[in-house]
Each structure stands twice: as C-alpha cells, then as structure tokens.
Length: 114
Length: 118
Image (cartoon, rainbow over all chains, first blue to last red; front, side, top):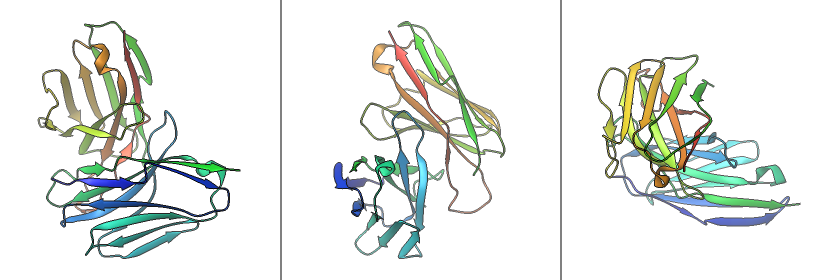
C-alpha cells in the first residue's frame, strides 16, 4: 500500500521568512496530493491540493510542487505570519487504494515567531 | 465547501461502557465516509471506510467488533466504541466524500470528537 513520509517534523521560522515542507510517497499510481493545516483540537483544513497532471500550483502565499518521477511533493509558504503556526499534513491518494483512501504523512509542526 | 458535523464534540466515559459518535453530512450526500483516530502529536490514522448501505472496510489492526460502524443513510454514519478502555482515549475524526464519478473527490472533515475513557 501507499506510504507517505514527511519532513521535517518541526520547523521554526521568523515572521516573513519562507517555510518548506517535503513529502515523499511510494505508490506511483497515486494521483492526488492535498495539504492540510490543523490547529490544536481542530479538524484538518484543506489549504491546497495538486493533481498528478500538474507540476505546480499556487494560491497567494502558498504553493505546492509535484515531481512525479521522484515521487515527492512540497509545500511552500512565503512571507510567513504567526497565524500560519499549526501542524501541516501532506497526504496522497491513489487509484489502487480503493474507496478514495487518503494516506497521511506524519505531520510538521510549524512555529512562526514574531 | 461542504459541511460535516460530528456529535458529541467531547465525551468522558467509564471503562467498559460503549460510546456512539455520529457523523453527518449537512448539505451533500456522502456516499463514502471515513473514520480516523488521532493520538496526541500524531498523524491521522484511518480506521475504516464505509459506503452507504454496505459493510465497512477496516484497516489492518482495527478490531471491527470493537469499533462498530454503521452507514445507514447518505448523510449519517456512526462509530460505536464498544467496551471502551483508557487506551481508546483519542481524537476521533470523520470525513465524508460525495461520489460524482470523478477521481479527485475531496474529503470534508468533521470537527472531531475527543473521547476520554476513565
């Protein structure tokens, strides 16, 4: 089955800096890669996603890149703000997993200091 | 986006009792619902997937007789933790997905239920 690895587990940056979180996946058939932001005690919130037919997608300060050959994808946050502090999860979903099952990475705790 | 609710948001129970958690899709028909468990500082771990009107598919290592899932309608799925023990204390989150025939169906998450077993 699919296995998703995520790095780093924690990331501390100064306000205004950029943050990059990286994930790798194992199933070459995976075709959908969402990123979620989760604040303490809250539900995961979808912040951006990318499909396998696209290499890059951007939404204001957030961008995601996908390298299908290397089977990795990354989240880029520019001009970070304290309210960006949260845990971020990547996920992958493949055709072979059935029932549209998402497999989550282990999470990255991002801390943005003012 | 679509709205998914969960009830209760928080429950405390004694060891040995059963607890039922409801997950509802409020403004769309959820043909597939997913149940996750999240321990502190860990990722979401899928417990089971249920399609309306059929038996749930459980992930490896999840006891189907302990975690009973019912998906009787297109807007409601329930998870019952039977004979709960302290190690079952966790954050339980459901998600729902509609079926439009597309591959890239987004999952919409409920707000979660914090279960504490004393």
